[in-house]
Image (cartoon, rainbow, N blue to C red; front, top):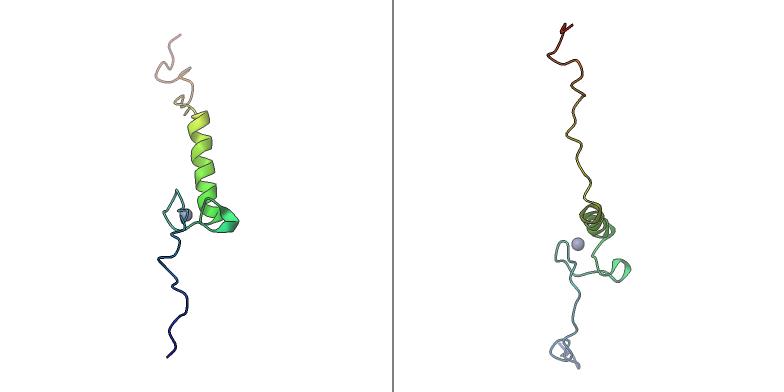
Length: 71
Ligand SMILES: [Zn+2]
């Protein structure tokens, strides 16, 4: 069995970019993410964090709630 002429590792530790979402090695196609899904997740996170969608806690106007037959 012939040995490998070139040492694969220990030559130049290339910094593998990790997906900030799941930690997997990022793909060149989806850098810096590993997949489109992770890119989407990050985008959504950024989006929601930036806009901070206010939840409308107004569940139905209390116009005629328990004040029925007041008049
Ligand atoms: Zn990922």
